[in-house]
Image (cartoon, rainbow, N blue to C red; front, side):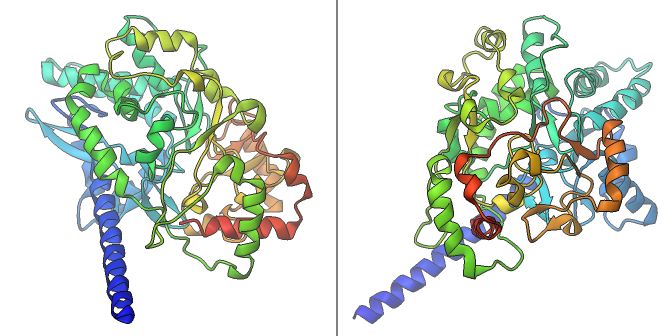
Length: 469
């Protein structure tokens, strides 16, 4: 009888595991094809421009079409799957074709050559997108008298103007400026946003586990309350320029968060793990990292049990302060007294407190590291700032040839490439991450206990972290 019970239990667990994987695959497919365009509102480019651009997403591409796709990938950082750009949609509306940018343009990315739904896009460059759109759309919209065209065109121009504003834009591809979202709340009050409000640069956050993360706050520092669903709509909010848009699609946001993002699994590490040192790495993690990052438990089928992270005081973690500094009393007041004050709130205790010590499921794919993406590999996260690279390339960051299997993260410049790369970095090259730029410091996350680590300790800890999927 015991053998029969054990067999039935094994069959049941196996069936459940297969169902869980299938749910993940269906959720990934749904998310990759998702956008929030609704009744003319959404993150768009000027109407009918997409008629000329849409050849990039047609089936049976010829060489010229593939060239255009590759050009757009390289220049703007979009990723493609099955020869189609991810997060770019052609939506008919009132006799026009509207080019819509979906949330997956930023919130799906590549790591080691794999397209991963819910991973932050490592190569997206919002500033470059905005700069080019501003020029092209400005000419495109000249002379039109169609009110529906002018409605979409006006919002598209606002989107381009904001993300291309050199005072608040991102300074390197792969990070985005949270201050762009702040601009909506000034506009909501009929005010011009200040040019000196900072950038708040962060790498695009990953989304698996967000359902359980919300009680601790949203995204990097937890200052934005996750009690509702409105803050998840942040980027769309300033792009669509409409609080009514948020109200209209709030049920869809809730459904997407709970029933799609809530079913995403972290990506499996695709290479060989040195299993002989993982146990040692786990012990090192438990003795040195557990206090902040917490336990990483699994269910009976071995899948991650997502739990909320902790916010660690900035005086403890000591990473770049720019992101937490932009959540000012003025900004909080603008939100509370604005048209969306009933939907958007704050975790008051977390305002300018510090940053999440995130759960590390799928961390192998979430490079570069820290909230602003300033450290290229897991191994370098265990070294002092003086031994971390000042520059590294973000070009093709998600491709297979850019993954460093040994150190867990991005490959670095070769010795004979360093001088030229540093020169480019100092000139503002957007492909080169340079930690001397505003908001991109690689300081912090180096603790007293790390000083005793040997090279072998760091290797073992990295191998354990690779196993968290």
